[in-house]
Image 1: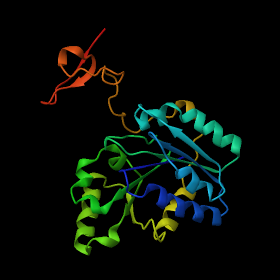
Image 2 (image 1 turned 135 degrees about the vertical axis):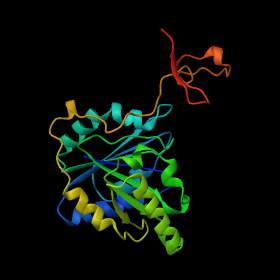
Image 3 (image 1 turned 30 degrees about the horizontal axis):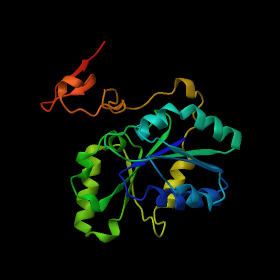
Image 4 (image 1 turned 90 degrees about the vertical axis):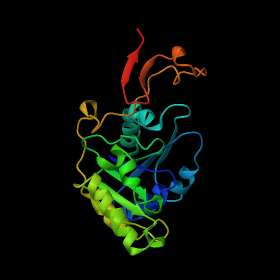
Length: 232
């Protein structure tokens, strides 16, 4: 099971399209589940590769919570399709996403043009990834690329970094090798997340529109950082 996360517009689908072509050339049979929020046409892009493709729209639910909640169904679907590799691409929203499970291969796709401090601003989808694919490095200077790479290693010293190009496919062969060498998940029922998911239980989550504090319940964090639970 391969879980792909990253910032919006970083090129996750483009990178994975080239990577899947490499997998197909190696005789691997992949399938893709694309998790997005309101709309996606990425299933059409993946469909051109003639591989099994499934779309999940989380709508008003956090896409990573949605993906985690539906993991068993996605695995069962992939098993029925008779594939070797299940690739789950999840939408990037809050930069605090934590979609990887302990035994999956976690791939983070991140845009080098987003600024040298971006690796410090994002959360577990970078810091707990196995592989970090840095995109759009061809349109910044060598010095900027080196600073960005060092910031990534500062946040995740154990990761493997690849400079990739979503247009040409440069670097995707190396990512396909990482996927080919990934271990199997034997027992999904007892699989666990590497990091706790973002907080997602409060009255705002279920539709409350009033802004005064007195109207809200659930897990809440104040501006000074204090977190508390209000409710039954």
